[in-house]
Image (cartoon, rainbow, N blue to C red; front, top):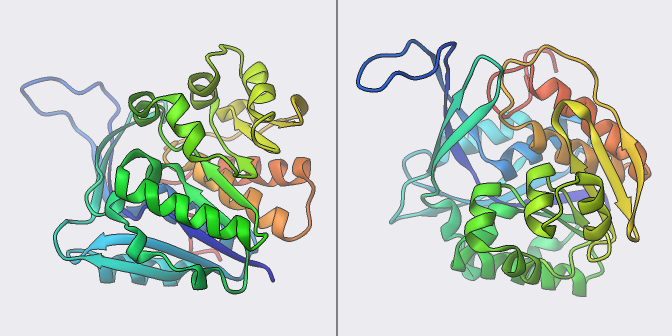
Length: 298
């Protein structure tokens, strides 16, 4: 089995790239595009881009954009397992991307965090070698319960599970203790430096990675342009650099790292090799607008 099942968010991204800071009460020039996104969906697409041939995505959308998202996922090579919510619109994120390529999100979670235990079935794990859970699921009660059900069933089936904490802002609102309790039993954690700090209270990413690896067997902390740290059994075991690129949009860089890391692991790579693959994908991701891989050269 080499299948990867991602359970997570499907989002409509409105990406606004602006050279000058927004000016209140008037216009600010920007380049604006509407694109398919979502941390879970992006990671699934990058896993395919990185060589994983069997990638599935369970998520919830509104009926306003369900077909569009399903088509985009199929085009990327992902098998969409989308549940249409009759009462909520598809999640939408406005990504404000400044001249340095740093992004700030305005998020309407919509249908994404309404994924319910009724949408989950242990049968979804058939043929699956790894389960990945987007951390956004843990920020609302219905989707958190669903994620816990999926994690429990995967553990019972002997299938490893990874989690991406997803959002420092939402993580701070939920609380580190609640997040760590909800993700107990996961095998791999993919925090960025800010999320690692929030989860441990430690300012230094390496120290935070080491502490987190006492709770999760494998931890990979992403550091943006500085690469990534790999930690296992309470110690940092590798520091992996990122390729130097000229960034245009940092949206989805962490999702690209996650997807490529998991694809590499499923292909037999060790943790360091997987982190190297993740850093290469993350570097590619920041050179394109939006969180998905480019498809015109695939």
